[in-house]
Length: 153
Ligand SMILES: [Zn+2]
Image (cartoon, rainbow, N blue to C red; front, side, top):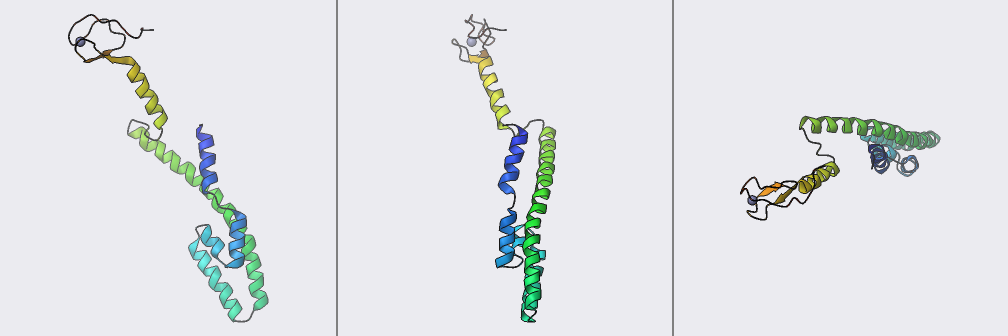
C-alpha cells in the first residue's frame, strides 16, 4: 500500500461526519461541537440555548439552534481539515524519529523483506552446523568442502 493511500485511509477512519455533528446539535445543542472535539464551545453553546429557553426567548433559542446545526456541520469540516494536517505532521515526526534510530520501525514490510534476504544469503554447514554463506564452497568454521546452495550472481 502506498503511503498516500494509507494516509487517505487514516483520514477516512478518523474524520467526522458533518451530518452527525449537525444532528447532534439539533437534538442536544452543543453535542455536535463535543463530537468534533471542541468541548468548551459545546458546553458554552448548550448553556446558551438553555438560558435562552429559560428566559422564554423561544424564537431566539430556535434561531441559535438553527445556527448550531449549520455550524455543527461546518465544524466537522474544520475538524477534518485539521485532522489531515495533524496526521501529516504526526507522520513527518514519526519518520524523523525512526530515521534517527537508524531503522524504519514503522514499516514492518521492509524489515520482513530484509529477513528473507538474510535467510537466503546464509545456511548451516552440513559438517559442523555453523552458519555459513549460501554461496560458500568451503566452511569458514570447520574448513570442509560444501556444495553451495545458491549461486553468486
Ligand atoms: Zn563447517
